[in-house]
Amino acid sequence: MIATALGSFAGTDLRATARAVLGELPDRAPIVELPDRGPQASMIARTAAMLPDMPFDRRPSGWRLAPGPSLVGRRAAALFNDDVTMTAEVIEDWQGTLTLTMAGPWTLLASLDLVRGGRAVGDAGARRDLAQAWLAGAVDRIAHTRSQLDRPLAVQIDEPALPAVLAGTIPDESGRRRLPAVEAQEVQESLGACVDATRGAAEDIVVIHCCADRPPLTELAAAAPDALSIDTQRLDGASWDALAQWFSAEPGPGMDHALWLGLLPTSTPGFGVDAIRVALDECRRRLDADPDGPADRRLALTPACGLASADPVDAFRALADLAAVARG
Image 1 (cartoon, helix red, strand yellow):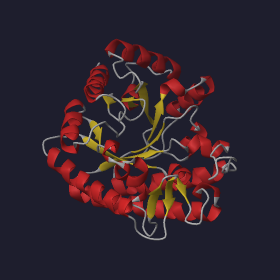
Image 2 (tube, rainbow, N blue to C red):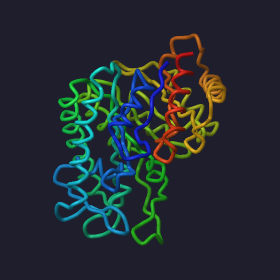
Image 3 (tube, rainbow, N blue to C red):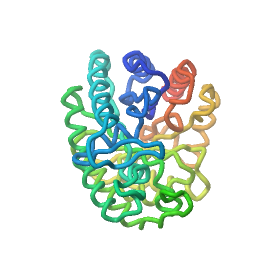
């Protein structure tokens, strides 16, 4: 069993933060995100910057696709490239596997307005175009990042907005109405294509992360990722049953059916080793996973979500606690 983190941290010094994260997580660690550096460092901007021929900008009302290149778009692309360069400098003596994080297509669609107005997720043509652009952009970004770091990468696809997309609770541009729900079949096909494309480019596992209440496990599992990353505090009884069924199923060729268990509430990063152990034992019970059995090796311990809102000292202590529990 290993411990890892999910991408974002507080602060603005990427080199120092990356060194601290790698020092606590010897097996697997994210390429650090530091959203405190401004809009260009946010998850949406970093991912939108990889979309070919789909410029974007930011207005007071939020993110939108744009008729031409914008300053925030150029800054997001340049900042990501700088981050990769700095990461390459600090991993020379680190032997673990890095995880490249990116917003999934459905969260991106839920976060962007169209040039002419209206949410992108509510337009079938925009959904199709952005899904294709995401695939092309993700493959190119993975290839570029791998060439800079000279090692395989895991990929983490973040989909916090997916439950709202499926439930039809995304507000329209005015905020007065809700957009229609997107059919589950469309979501499954799109996410499955994302998993296939990124797995082939990265040559390591693909993880789908969803930290929302009652994550749509049927749709997530149908995309056939190698691992699901879930905030365990947000699961109800039916969700635990579905998760246990997926975890116990026979993985397909080249797949792991692993679980990244978000045990550490990001609101209370000083949770402590004993509380983490209790939470892990409860997860094992719900999953019917033997602590001494081979399935336990398919578990990873993580914070529930990113740690951008946590004090850095508390965040790194939390990672150390997770790593200590993972080591047994």
